[in-house]
Length: 331
Image (tube, rainbow, N blue to C red; front, side, top):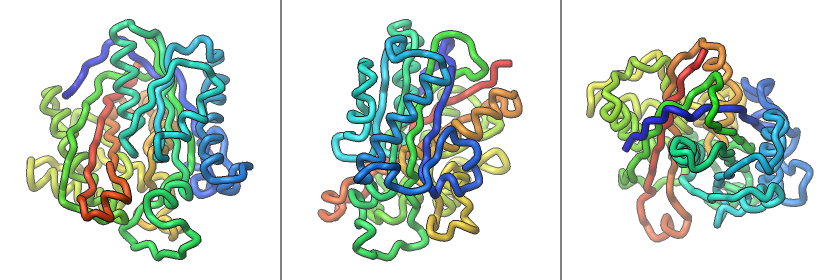
C-alpha cells in the first residue's frame, strides 16, 4: 500500500550516538557522540532515554523552535512497552503516538506523520527513535555478562537517538511517498541472523512500491535498505533477481554496512542494526546529499524483525516487516 504526498517536507534532523558509531566512518557527521555506553547515566536503559531526549533537544535547537510549536511527536524503540520513548519525550509535553516496527520504526513514523500533515490535520511532526546496544542485547539475546559467543551472521545494535522534523512548507527535501509493508514469515528462528530474516520483507516492499508507483528500479539514484547487514544484502539481491528479475546493482546500499567500518571494527560482525541504525545513516550522510542535489531520488527501505525471546523459546519463527519512504531533492 503506497501513499503519495504533495505537501510534506523535511525541515531538519538530529543524531546522537555512542562510542562505536563515533568510531565508524560517519562519526564526524553526527550532531553529538559519547565515548562510553553509559552516556553519563547509571543504567543502559537510562542511557537510551537520554539519547532520545537529547536528539529531540538538538532537533528543536537546530530548527529554532520550541516544543509548543510542534503539533505531534511519534516515537518508538526496542524496549518493552517502548519505555525509552515515553521517558525520553515526557518533558516536551507534546501530543504523542507511540509506535513499534522494530528497526523499521522510523519509516513507519514518517509515513504516519506525513499522512497527517498531507491532510492538514497537523502542520508539523517530530519522529524519534532510539536503540542501545546493551539494553537490546539484554532484552533480546543474552546480557554481555553471560559471555555468550556471537556468530558472524549477527548484527550489532546501534547506540543512538535520531529525530526528524517534518513540515508542510517547502524545503530542500520532499517526502514524495510512503509504502507500508506486509508481515513476512520465512520460517527462520535464529535471533543471530536478522539479515536472513528481514531480506524478503525488504524485497516485497520494494516490489510493492515499484508496482504501486509504476516505476522501474533505476528510477532511484539510491535504494538504501535498513539493517540487513552484509549477508542480508546478498540474500535480498538474490531474492529480487530470482523471484522478480530485478537487479540491485550500483544504486543499492544498506545502512547496516555503512554505520561501522566492517574491516576495522571486527566485533560488529555483519554490521549495524536497531531502530537508530537507518536514520543515523540517512540523516547524517544521505540527506545532505539530497539537499545538495547530488542524489535526486532516494528510496529508504527500513526493515524490522518482529520477535520476542518468549516466542523464540516456544519455537515460533521470527516475523519481519519493512516500510519504505521515497525522498526527492527540491532545488
